Length: 479
RNA sequence: GGCGCGGUACCCAAGUGGUCCAAGGGGGAGGUCUGCAAAACCUCUAUUCGUGGGUUCAAAUCCCACCCGCGCCUCCA
Image 1 (cartoon, rainbow, N blue to C red):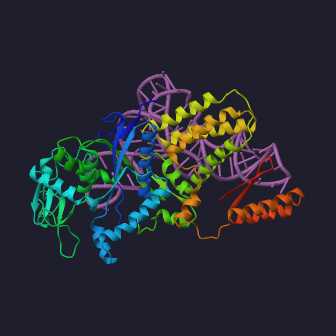
Image 2: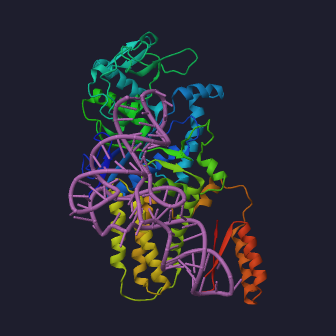
């Protein structure tokens, strides 16, 4: 096992990863704002976070991950009443959908899912602490963070604020803040808006305070890893640092990892351009969760990922290839031998796989190791040179791959059906399919290939692909 | 304007000084296998890494200049 390295936004460099407490990783990941269905761009980041936690876990770390669910923000406060719902009921729907989506994409459940509105008290306490320590001030009904008190501000985003004076860029008269850079910790109650009555006054939390409050509550003053999309570097994460470190006097996060954005056809997703996709949109078009997950995971996380339907198709083909391989390893009758000529080769593939992921989660490199082995073993099997004794090691390697990538299980349809998201077309039951296959087998035995091909064609049109194996059995799968 | 990411074959993409006259996947062409397919395998598909200079015995990899795409600096994964 080599050394783990991550690109740390804070230092701008790749650094060896060593958690504060040996064997334990405290990780905070910015989750969704539940004002709508999450889109595939969101899931790019969530898949990255999942790959990260899975790899840490595989490396033997005990991972404690907290993910927040932001269920109070301007859009929610605005949209909920418009939908005739309280903000709780309104966001419940999208939380439920998000959890379903997580399940479909095989995203592991973080140890703690923290809903913002369940932590108002924690946020209020944090704001009160910042007031006590002089890092915050009241202005009209709101409370602001005083950037001037925190000289390190800008360390994460490398934004240089020295040239910006209050009023230099912003018309001060329109603001009740002392400094244009100051940001809201607590927003005043406005008539008709949802609010909380608290000891720091009536109102609602600012955007950044929830993450500080919940991270500190569940993970303590110093986290090992904090992740999110690149767009959160400034101001969100910068502000989290300011809030948290001002309150605790301790370093807040040791490694900041940021995922690059997903684009669609070279453009940023946006509703106005109409290139905005949720998972449900893709499922409705017949795409599989495993293909989506593979696509999102296969491009290293710090690289902008250009989503196209062609790319999604390519990902589906890649997953197929891997599944076919595992299937073949399990079912093919391999020559018996006590020799394991491939043992060293399989070990090497494992090392390459590992080395790829160790290098800042270079999933593309890790995948190359997997596919290389797949080809070599397929070739050996074709030539009858792959011994049964080697199969367990090969399967174990693929299992290790799947602990991270989680695309091999082949339960796409079952999951979609369970979630009520399977494509609408009427599906044949397994029994019906088996019956047609038996019928075709008889036709083939009497060498009536026309009839046999007709059945194969009919099944193909209904999304069932047949493969005649050498031993006379027929393998089928849904496409 | 400031900060940052990227431009590698038809598509996705690794590689950041020699082991690269450039991984891996997808697609395409031809072939093996098959009754035919499918799957799998084999061969081919970048004398070249945005462009132009430079450094070096040696560059996709370092330096300089330029061109192009994108992000953040306001809400955003």
